[in-house]
Image 1 (cartoon, rainbow, N blue to C red):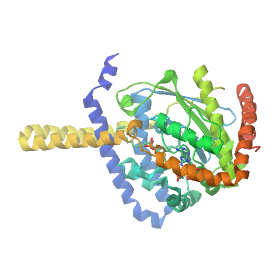
Image 2 (image 1 turned 180 degrees about the vertical axis):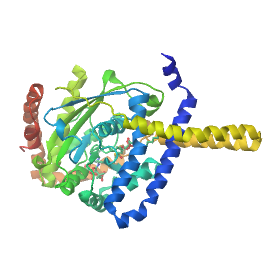
Image 3 (image 1 turned 90 degrees about the horizontal axis):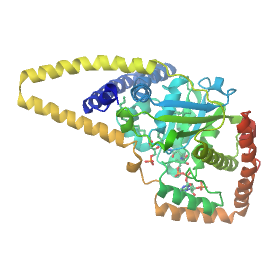
Image 4 (image 1 turned 90 degrees about the vertical axis):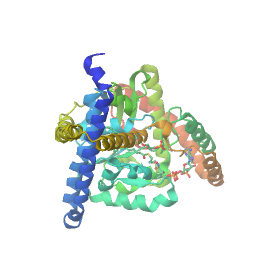
Length: 427
Ligand SMILES: CCCCC/C=C\C/C=C\CCCCCCCC(=O)SCCNC(=O)CCNC(=O)[C@H](O)C(C)(C)COP(=O)(O)OP(=O)(O)OC[C@H]1O[C@@H](n2cnc3c(N)ncnc32)[C@H](O)[C@@H]1OP(=O)(O)O
Ligand SMILES: CCCCCCCCCCCCCCCCCC(=O)OC[C@@H](O)COP(=O)(O)O
């Protein structure tokens, strides 16, 4: 390990990075708050300003990944789809297995110029995370409690609001609803069994309501779904703390563009379509685990300098007053002032540690983990089974999926366009 590598592991460097992130983030949050009066005067302008302000925060984390840790991101995609990326509104469906999968998503957003405006269907708890959560409020991020009865109205309203959004955006959906753990996987596969759906090895069973409602309400605005599958080379399990320590990872992202027109409008058909998509994603991950790569050509967009420049700007702006303050402090020699400052630094680092904890899977929620939920599902399942037609449709689709996927895999190897083929469910 070189000198720079050693430096990256020093606690003092982490303190400085976190200080810059926290203080610049709070400044940006304050500026966002100042845009409130503008919303009533010129809503579209307020949205554009907020996209740029949000970029100042999220691009710092992207710079940390790309320039500090040097993590590489390879994109596997159809060359015919490539020109669309960043030039249209899209719904992104991504697997949820890694602590930094959202950060890799952000990196691709940055490379295609949609980082400031990117959106997500996020759990409500994240809205209260300082800096990021507060920034999301002004970006009109859609929040959910993951209780459909309570979410239905608010999610639909938030989606409707995005219909006239002035910037191109990617709307991220983790349809699994929570991060993959062995326990959640086991419970989720029991649900799959009850529903007569094939088991998944690398994914949890997708929750279909959020996807269907998003497709339904963003139709006309969004033109495609980007089916995205992420994995890391050599079975790496990346973490945000690892990134902060300068650890380099290698991410592989497979993206398939599916025109929105080819996704069924009817809710139950849309749900079947999503289950089929996850079975295809599962087969793709199986291939990755065998070959160590996704099929098809790689077309990685290069890193852009803007995230780094923004980060350097904030470092220069905020380090100077910090150094002055520290000098003055030690010059004053007051034990009380020094102790108070040390305590404040300690409290701030605890705060940042708590924020980093939000990204850690072993501190994740119990959503999808509860036996109680399973019992509810059993009831749901019984109701579903009463409608034998639905169950049969599921089974028929399952059979159809196999055939469709064989077609899909063969086409994949030949790197031909798959969108239209995979977009339609023949069930
Ligand atoms: C290309 C590069 C990527 C670009 C990236 C772009 C943008 C980046 C932008 C931002 C990055 C920031 C990242 C922040 C990350 C934060 C993400 C999150 O917070 S994820 C968590 C919140 N999001 C979701 O949950 C979305 C998915 N969920 C849904 O859509 C849900 O339907 C819902 C709308 C949340 C409602 O939840 P609820 O639980 O009420 O769902 P359902 O009604 O659907 O669930 C009941 C349904 O599921 C079955 N069930 C029950 N238990 C299980 C189980 N354990 N496993 C699977 N299924 C289960 C149950 O039988 C019911 O079935 P049915 O619907 O048939 O009745
Ligand atoms: C320059 C950068 C400096 C970095 C130092 C400070 C870092 C602070 C980082 C705060 C990041 C907060 C954003 C959290 C995003 C977490 C995304 C995520 O993965 O959420 C999980 C949910 O999807 C599902 O939750 P679970 O049900 O699995 O539980």
